[in-house]
Length: 312
Image 1 (cartoon, rainbow, N blue to C red):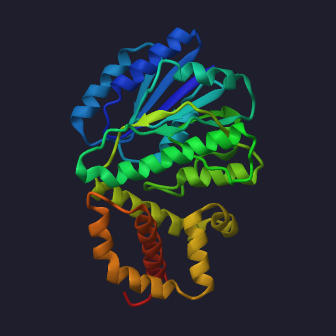
Image 2 (cartoon, rainbow, N blue to C red):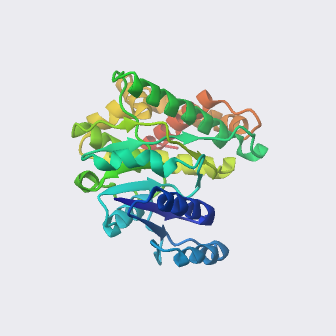
Image 3 (tube, rainbow, N blue to C red):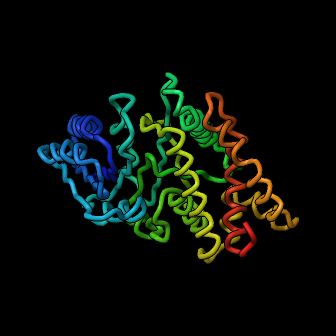
């Protein structure tokens, strides 16, 4: 029936796995929970997660060296024995007791991919994590909008795909799988969504969210964001269908416009001059999300300027 797949990196997943296990038992379905520790360097967390091996139908794999999110998810899918795969991020928390039950009807369908959504708690995090929380609340609104549009049969928007919490038919997954070109953090799920689009598969959106509780502090989140932008540069350089990237990824749409009007160099220079001021805002207690998007665009122009051997 269902293989629940959770990549782990430096995170205590005991509560999440125990609750998933209990929900699956209560639902009376055939299931397995497969965990993959992607070379966590926190020895205490590694030791704690070892306790999960005691649960029936739970298997913990461990990698000796870090492989990245795409490789980890593909590995787990390769170990799965059931026809439907439920991918979850390790830094998530169940909202209610019906999470597994809500996915069961979809496990009777072929060629299905279902995004369950993401939610964030209302309580403000520590002030050094406001940027990630605020951006997360924006993600939550987008998730709710996608569900509403789907229920209203409004297919005018380009589908949005997130790997945080999704169910997929096993054969469909293996017809696409995560592109292992991207080793670092960011956009492997974006690319997966693009491949779904290109092959004519429609994403089902359902109101079955998980809390995202792994709220990075701002320095870590900005670093991850920059790695995600670096992945976009890799895609621009090496992905064979550049037009699809520009069509489906908003940041690349804006970059393409700057290319067409020959303003990439100017934007790079502006980014260099204003970067300290932008970082001051983003690391403050009231970060501006529009400025955050401008920062990402400027950083992409900076990277592409390096590629073209501009004087930085």
